[in-house]
Image (cartoon, rainbow, N blue to C red; front, side, top):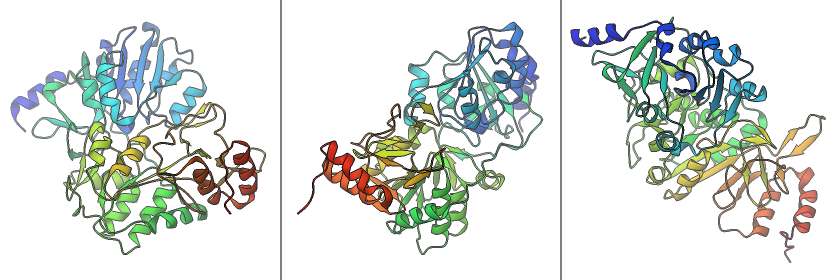
Length: 446
């Protein structure tokens, strides 16, 4: 490594407690995405609780412990705001010391630069500096540079376990663009266990697999269905698949190792697997480390419907909580109880449909078991009061349950209702027909 770079590094190297001295009462502090969020630096900031008031922290899937939340259950000293909820975000939301910020994911960099309260301090976990003086954002590059461009101070928390992920764009930062370097104790990165698919989820996956073909470019969400699809693709005869996704998960690892992913038929980023952030197993992080075939982009590229639409035969596969008979999809709340966020689902729903030969699938089991032990239909006459519409009926393409696929595009309200009732659980179909009749969206044929 160049001696000058080493000297720059040495001059900027401080302890976590020294780094957080730049935070003032009333500041907005932004953390990197997911597993690239602050850990030991947040812990150091928590130690300043009695000195600070009204410090707002913005995160996106806060994967590390929220030390500042734990130190201040009142929210008077530190208050968190999340672009998308992970499990810890939900916990502190329920305790009243964290709020949700609505967004469409591809717009996040623009909102960060133009619409949000300006970032005073940006803190991100990175891989060690390379011989050229760059730190990689590793498993989370969605919008770091948008925050950096507005920040008064930039702090990097170095963790030797963070993979070095190639670009792409905006996937790294140079030592000259950093104010403080904090060397962590190198804790293991948070992992996300792959959900084992149920028999119902496997059936849903089968319905989708039957609609895939050689050369498709795949975007997968999170959960049992994507894992089932990844396993089935790995065992299938499909070939020359492409990958362009916001979230890189273990299902892609299975597909890659089975030789199904080449990217040979992609019109852009040919031969490359493109993602914006990764969450999964340690094995997944090892796979993306210094891998020229897997590249990271900012989310205003990966999730931009105009970019997605340029890739022929694009297939988007995501999950939801419930759907109403008009075709409105809720994927982020149970009534008024917030669960996750809009994220990039709508981005990919719109982009995939605009792709030549593209398909967008929204998946769900036909029923779930309620708190009283009774089965409840996920296909409802109208959404649960207070439920957030993630995908408007005008955008939705195909909805999938274990009973089949309902295509929404080009259908009138009664045709939509009929198609959705046909993939509802048989025990609920007669009741749904009656509800559709009362809402004037049912037409008996013949």
